Length: 623
Image 1 (cartoon, rainbow, N blue to C red):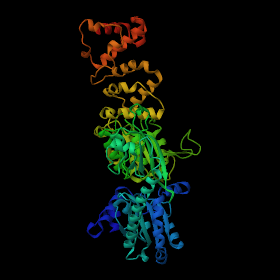
Image 2: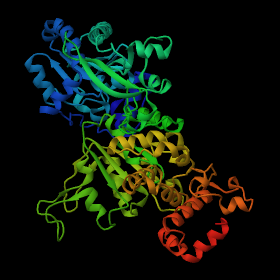
Image 3: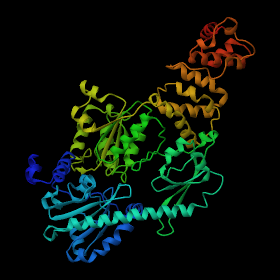
Image 4: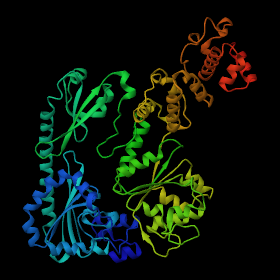
């Protein structure tokens, strides 16, 4: 059955466990090599130590239970393996001969043992299916594991989230009929102890922070999951009734708090992090200096400002779903919407986060250089090449994520070469005959309609389907205008600036359509921080000259800028008949005339417009 499937793609699902047949199909679709299957990505040194520190609680709770089974495991010639939720082997227990046997296929501590890496196996398939499974002999997708029998069971935390996998493996001839029952029993025991540990940690957290919560400042206590487990008297008075454990972000938004300071709290029992003590502010005046928290839904964190709009919350939900897989992603969005930031968020929350994130702007590289930039070249490949050759972006991204920005600009001949790499996962540098295997996730981005480019024959259809596995639409700023205040706060915090005039013109800034999106907003804020507040009317006037799509009330009454009545009032022209753009323009003209003591030519020069145009505008606004 295995030979027929890998050679012909034919599978007899009736004779094969459903989970195994599903896994075989996934492996084939992801171009996993069935004739290899040895470990490739191995964490060593500080990287491995860091991974173990991150999963300290999993190790502390699970290993004592494994130790209790150590004599049985050693006597039967088995290995007990603990794996984290990303697929990295944190611990292997067994006798030296069997550990050396496992080492022949790179099945060692620190290796990443997932379906994407080594094909169908008990560990990787349990991670995907999130249920116990036994995989034996040729049920494994890759030949390297055909001599092994493995049983694995997932471990979940107190809220049902996957935190790791426990596996018992042995050579095929030593397989024990109760392996799956044994490993499932240990995993269940670990889950029960995990829940008890969390309850004790929360009790210790409240006890340790009780004195810190006293006082006149609003204080909340958070557990490791960013859930509020306790609030002090100041916050309870504002809430009316303490509802019990609740979401931190919801509390901040509903009661108009911002976080001022956060202090981590460690356990006196086991030394690990058990939560945080957060001091809040409720002053509206402090919002521009506040520190917005990253989005958190338990599994994914976004490094930038998320805002509150439904449009971007949908994007965050998509990121969470995408990050759990290794599928290629195609981000479509206008220039300036933050496509690279979203790509980084996907990478940081994905199975590839331990590897590099390599970004390539396909539209910025000359067509005659893009091949060497992506594929690299061997020493002496061409005149002017580097002495020791060059490692291309595809190879640089090995083990991580390759971000191809503006993929719609890639030349047609390079589309063929890129398609081959995505299919075979191998790179051949220019001037070299050796193929270099690469394990990368590809995230592409574009502001163009790739489907239309395919119809026009400008983009290969097969490459389109290879990249367009999971399309992600990034909304422009005009579709999420309610996020503008949050983005302004984020910019001010990141750049340590205070823009005192912004609160008075937030509504006006939200009326503008921002064709340059977030990039234009940040550029405008940077310019405003340089030119000073007195130039704000000119800046707003310049913005709306690009074409606002809605009218709005004026920023300030016109009579506050002039002495006495304006010509528009004396002639009976009502101010509210002007569009918002026109009112801004009128105000800027009035201010220019005031600064130049009524000199029209000087005012025109100050505004940077021809005198003839300036006189026409004076007549238009009855000035």
